[in-house]
Amino acid sequence: MSIEPEFRQDPVCGRWAIIAPERSHRPKTLEGAEPRHRREGERKPCPFCPGQEYDTPDEVLAYRPFDSSPNGPGWQLRVVPNKFPAVRPDLVTLSSTADSTADTTTDKNMFLASPGLGRAEVLIECPEHLPDPTHLSDSQFSAVFSAYRDRLIALADEVQLAYASVFKNVGAEAGASLGHTHSQIIATPIVPGIIESELAGSAAHFSRTNRCIFCDIAHREMTDRDRLIAQSENFLVLSAFAPRFEREFWLLPKRHVSRYEAISSAECLELARLMKRVLSSLDIIMDKPAYNWSLHTAPLRSTEMPHYHWHIEVMPRISRPAGLEWGFGCYIIAVSPEQSAREFREHLS
Ligand SMILES: [Zn+2]
Ligand SMILES: [Zn+2]
Ligand SMILES: [Zn+2]
Picture 1 (cartoon, protein in one colour):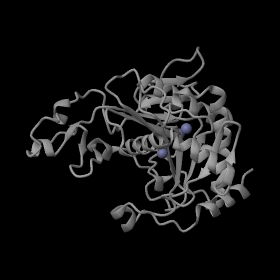
Picture 2: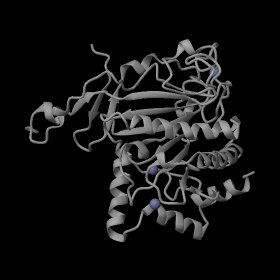
Picture 3: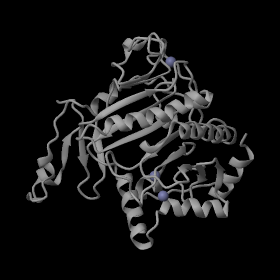
């Protein structure tokens, strides 16, 4: 049986899945960690620590002094292909499977599948074996946001890729398999469903009002302040109005911009400082919960869109989705977003 990854689309609602058998071989050193809270999982030696570069594929980006050698120690940040990838760059797309003129009554066309083409990368955020992103220095945290930008720009050169999903898992409950702080990038020929639906929803709002819905949200939340958690000169942190997880918050630029790639280095540092403050507050309120964050930005190579606005969604994982959430897509939240914003503000440093 083939172990090549494959995209499959649900024939009823169009939801995509990636079938990726190689993922079952990845190390899971955080397994068994206490639910709800983070723990420093250890695997000695850690494949992300300096001196272990041979244990990862060759770097595609590194911030390192000019006199240090690629794939050796001395780096501040490295991006390497995922050793256990969900998608692979060496596969050929079969665009014929999506032929709209084809007979859709046959099984072949009902069950859309194509090879799992793409790039899966790991962004190792610092050389120190730190499990917690709030322990990064401001400049290290800022480098993470710069590296997101640099990889999005580089991946846009690959015309077969349509979207790069940038995300981070912190803690075993959030899906992290190694304790050394890192982010992930999965770039694919498909645009993920959540981004498609945000693009469609924001385009519908724009056609009604000639305004960006995210700019409208930012303006309203800065005026009302009920769900405003923190702000800096150029960024805003909000408690999500209709969250999926307790204390879910969003971080977005005040100025309209659809493509994250447009962020400046100075803005990366500003974003890092703001994110660290809010994450530190979250750690106090929820006693270091596991969490995920994901960057939602316009598709690769898109021109500036008047209706879409990049943002980062942070989802603490203190409760597990259950029947209503999985079965019906409706989320039950015990702490109101307004109460959550108040508590965040109280614990901001
Ligand atoms: Zn490490
Ligand atoms: Zn906007
Ligand atoms: Zn979003």
